[in-house]
Image (cartoon, rainbow, N blue to C red; front, side, top):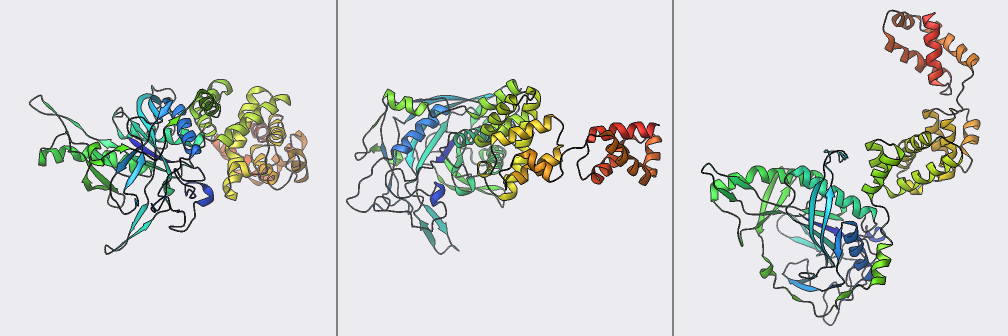
Length: 496
């Protein structure tokens, strides 16, 4: 599989034109992010973007690849309307990132990881840096429009060996690469904007009735920008290639490769063209861009930016914090969420909270209440007016039984608009949990009197109906009653 990652530098790969893959310029009008270099005007020369090189090297380290001390540039020649120079500056024999191996854990269709199953070992051949082409927008069949905003965007192309044998394995690999690239901050990873595009190369080994084997020609599926499309396109090829072989008898070999596009509406692939081989691109050394030489100091600086990778975080949360697989994954996928969790649990421990309670309540608050607050406001988690010290205080209140889960959620929402401590907010709003047995008993008596038929159902054996009574007590108390204490009191009173 080839995975194309648009790097989120502010400027393009070989010019000072703004990069649409950077959040600052993502909404630019067509053909406004160009300059004489992008337009290939006579006399212009490319100048390499150092930041793009550092991002490529960082990705190589995160993906387990070797990073070359010296890498070179090449011209890949082809004519297309969205490529003004008629060649692309790329890397052929000496890319920035060489061989590597990525251990890919199995995932279900929702992307949740099975940490207990054996990972698939995917070898990465290379990851090379190049410039992206522009974009063609086709009209009603009589015309096409060209947008050169994307032309020159720094593009990291990650190429794997054929180590995946199903759509599920390929999608898991794609998900993990995207997660890593987002985590290390080299791309926004928004696939609807084209930040990442997947191009699986698929063929089948057919076992014939006479005992012989044939390989079908390789099909490259172009520019898939969703995990759903990736899965459906691969499954379609695995299903259709044997039939094509029966019709045409074509087998894998030189100049037999083709490219196909995926039609999401019709759920089928469409032949685009025969695929060029390397010789067809007339590669030549790029004379205008010098080699990249990475000395030990530069490499050390880049390595220092790597930090803890998502899978490492998830495994730490499961091993050291006792979180379940989904909690560990949801926290580990987000740099902001994981940093907030680590700080909150540490401060909660300093406040004397039991370690198990600190881990559990911190994870629950962040994954439910804090995430909910961010989603409701349409902002990132890190943009909320929430900090670890105040969340740690809230964790301590939850651990002491001073707040139930529902009211803790309400306090988090109010904290977004106030700098007050959570205890002050809870007191002011009357959200502190009531554990006084006299008050709880009075609420329970009132509910038992109003819902006598349900009481008789419970006495008759329908014990699950007690949940209705607990809910009524919670409503009567404005959510401030201790639900566990309420259950105990109701059980005693009904049993009596």
